[in-house]
Amino acid sequence: MRARLKRSVHALSRTAGRLTAGSRVLPSFLIAGAQRSGTTSLYRALAQHPLILKPVLHKGIHYFDVAYDRGMPWYRAHFPLQATASRLARRYGCRPQAFESSPYYLFHPLACPRIAWDLPGVKVIVLVRDPVERAFSAHAHELARGFENETSFARAVELEESRLAGAVEGLCASPYSVNHAHRHHAYLARGRYAEQLAPLEPLIGRDRVLVLDSGRFFTEPETVYDRVLEFLGLPHIGDPVFERHNPRPRPTPMPEPLRRELTDRFEESDALLTPWLGTEPTWRR
Image (cartoon, rainbow, N blue to C red):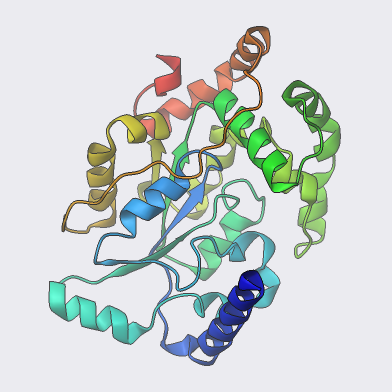
């Protein structure tokens, strides 16, 4: 009953949002990924800032990956009214910035060009995590959500290549399609961060992309938070509460031989990530 009521409220809110889409703000920045790398924790911390406007209904709209066929008025309907932004601007003497967080944007092959076309000047924040731990966490996450039926992480990794065969080509050939395996079973592929970041440089601009090491975010959240505010050009107002969100318990530990094998497989990819971070990833130190 509660779930049905919630869906009805969301549907009414989206309808009202579409009717007022022309008077709503668009996001100034996006948290584009990576999945299972602290995106929810960063989203919750930033949403506490009085000049950062979160979406009206939920953090991830997923317009540029799986809902692009709905059109820009539908997307815009998810954000606050311009009147709200103007009121805050008068109060604080600084323009507010709206945002959303959809961690599939980084990995979807069409999301980046769509973002660049529809949101010129937008800034993009990407969090990256030890890709082996990220993959292990993602497998537990997909199992818990019912999107994965292979309980063995090692077996899921073995199946990944065949599961993802032709997925990118299919998504590009049919731009409004959705590929279940590409979205839910790309455990290792989503950890090759430099490969996913490469299109952002020519389309978004290197100076408008901020890549953060989630290992540092969880150990020094205040420092990373201040760096994000500097990147966005926003003043420090108040002190947010930092919490870790969406942790997933692991059914069993990862076998050490498998961990070593996967760590070795990511060595070259991790090295290519260093220029984006400005330093060696924490998991390689």
